[in-house]
Length: 303
Image 1: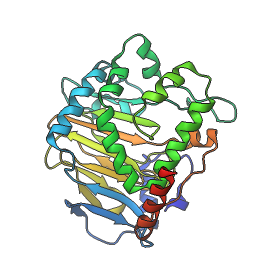
Image 2: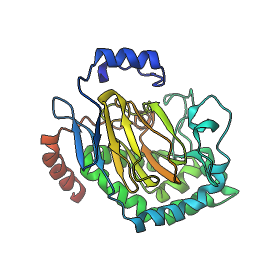
Image 3: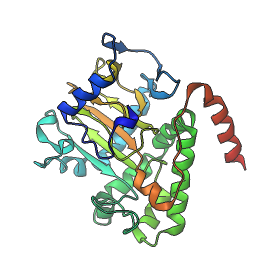
């Protein structure tokens, strides 16, 4: 399927998705997965990791407490724009609801790496006026570092290329905002999306590569919540404290509404930023190759 996807697939076109499902038919009944699981394709490529309930209640409480620094920005994020990400009718009634993206380096829509330089996202730039996002970065540094450590195991080459991207950004940028925030940024992912009490329609993540893994950490929510991988006919249990890493550009995924207050931290790469700084983009990870990749990664970090 990866080869069949265009560079600018909208991922919300139902006719297009129906055609893809018919072309790449999965002949099995829908399955609910509740245990720690790796989802593999026929060649052994790891398409998703499912780690249900791995984040302790104490860990989740700490994350939610730190998210309060972002509540003013989250509350202002819901608009009547055409983007489903801030579409009001997808959010449940709650004291806090919304979705924001934070990044130390990205290209504004329509800007290309060979003509422009990446910029700090607007919410972080606005922190000069109100310090909430910076407070969140510092208060949540430990939790983000723990989540980041899982990426070292799941996709060591993606971790390494992300780290190299930040090193190159730090050594090349003349942007004062970026120079200040990169030392504070707590992950090798280029974007952290913070989602509060929103149903997520089926979609793919267009800014990354098919070989890469997005990472989703769910905080709170219903014990029977699930994330649906529609083109695999699989539902993964998405109970509080679950971490899911998946090829977000291949797997058409969505999350229904939660009755209880629910937050998600979604971590993404930006392919155009890695292109802009000339970092070699890593490949798939196959289950049988993972021990060798981890050994090689460990050696590279000690040199």
